[in-house]
Length: 299
Image 1 (cartoon, one colour):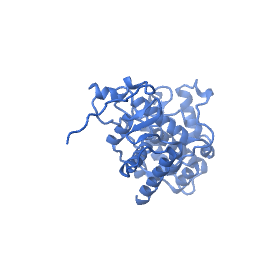
Image 2 (cartoon, one colour):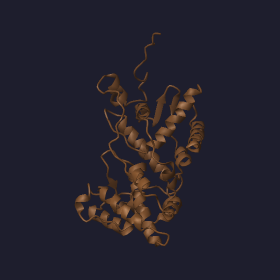
Image 3 (cartoon, one colour):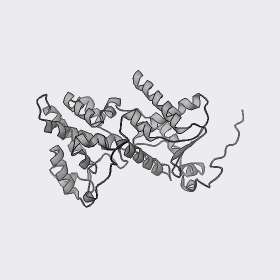
Image 4 (cartoon, one colour):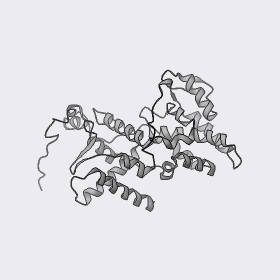
């Protein structure tokens, strides 16, 4: 059967003004091979949790902060071919996926329902007072909040990024000391350090290697205040930003909270299998939620 010819790009560029530099243009022009993205970073967090099961007091403290569901869901086996296909259909002009069934996008409600991250509350912002901080200032804050401070400044990468090897070793040593009788201050220090690694390794991963950013450290000072921030909003915004960066030019790496993207892609597959056309976004969000609940129940 002869395959009918397909138009390689958008029929109209009145809205898609960035098509000339979009990844799809480079692929159609032969300047970029249609290869899957290759993640650079090696995430050790899941191996650490497997080797050092969390103490029940740490689990309860993480539940209080609202981030334990991320650990409950656990590590994902990503389908990089599907993730690549989705990003190649992402349009930074409209923040939507342009698909054969119409336009669709990940909604903020998806983050809250699927992963338990709050979307109402205070904005997660970088305080103006910290913009002049140097490496030594971040290390002092790290020592004050977690009791960990590397012996040498050479472990820093830039002004606010830390090489993680010593962090994991310190966290393992702290884990061995946690008991039912541990002081609440020790529980909080352990929880802060673990949350810092969750931020860097799962929610806000980067593509420059395995490093720990200290820019969100100040949010961990008062753990009881964490549920009052709109974490779902900033996680989704960071994923949007990373997809906008990745879909342009000939990028070969991708970052962001990719479990959210894969969950969304599974919902799209279900809609296409059912033969549905263009989908209202709020209805689509409900369908993705149903699929996620069923997936978690089977797991």
